[in-house]
Image (cartoon, rainbow, N blue to C red; front, side):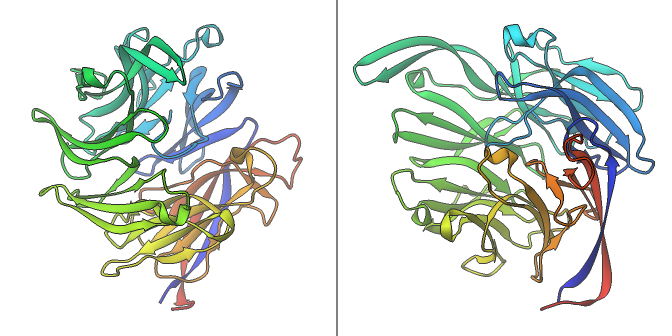
Length: 443
C-alpha cells in the first residue's frame, strides 16, 4: 500500500537574479545555491555568479561570496560530463567551489578551487597553479578526509587523422588527482600509457565508495568513429589501481550499491542502430571482480541503485522517441516501467530509497536546456505521481536537477513563477515539504 502525500511549497529566495544548483547541507541547517550574475555566452560551458548560503530555518542569507566569479555548469549535457558544481563537506562546515579569474574573457576558462568556511566566512584557495593544474569536477569522500579532482595538467602529443590529412598537436590531457580537503599531498591516480598517446584519452565518471576510501573511475580510449575501449579501475590509498572491467563498448556512468560491494553500469554499442537493442546493464562484485550481465542488448541505461538496496532505477528508450523510467526490484529478472511517456530527466532517489524524483519535460522548439519542466515525486511502491510545482501550470522550472535534504522530507528546486510579472522575474529558489496523511491510495 502506498501512503498519500501532501506537499507544501514555498519560495525561499526570490528571483531577482537567476538561481541555480540548490543543495542542502548534510545536517539540514543550511542551503547553498549559485546566483547567476554574468552568463558566459562565449564559451557556453559554464556561467558566473555568487555562491550564496542560506539559513534553512530563517531563510536569511548567511554568506554571499565569489565576487561574481563562481563558475558553475548547471545544464548537465549528460552524465559523465565535466560538471562544475560545488560540494559540501560531510560535517556541513565547508563548501568547495570553482572560481574564475577576473579577466576570463581574454584568457578562457582557467578557474581555481576555493573553500568557504561557513562558520567564519573565510575563503581559502587551493594551492594549485592555474597555469599548470586546471581543476574540473571533484568529489568529496564519505569521511571528508580525501578529495578526488578531475584535473587537466598533462601536455601530451596527439595525432589526428581525417582522411588523407594528418595533424599533430600538443594538448592538455586528463588526470585524476586525490588530495586532502585543501589540496594537501596530491597524488595522481592514473598512469597513462605512452602507447595510447595516438588515441583520444578521456577520464569518464568517478565515484567514492560509500564504504571505505576506495575510488572507482572510468577511462576511455578512442581511435576513429567506432573503435573505442572503456576500462573500469578501482583505486585505494597506498595500493594503487587495479582493473575491474574492460569493454570495446562505451561506458560513461556507474552507480554503487549502498554497502559498497557492487557497482552497476551500462555499456553502449554504437554499432547497433536500434536504441532498444543497444545497451547492456552489468553488475560487478568488487570483492571477486566477477561481472554479471543483467540485461543484454536492451533499451535500459543509466542504472541508479537505491540508497537502501530497494531496487535499481533505470532510464529507458520510450515509444515515440522519448525517455521513460523503469524499476528493477530485488528478486525480479526484468525491470517494470514506472514512467512510460515524455522526456524524463535526472532521476534521483530519496535518502530512504522509498521514493524518487525526476523532471518531466515538455519539449518545445528552443534548446533542450531551456525546455519547461516540472519536478515530479514518485513512490517506489507505486501510486499516482505527485507534482511539486509552486503554481499550477504557470511555473517554469529551469532544467537543473532538484535535490533532496538529508532527511528526504524536503526538496529544493529552481523555478520561475510566471504568474507574476513574467518578463521581469528570473528563476528563484523553492522548497517543498513532503507530508504524509493516514490512509492509502492504490496498492
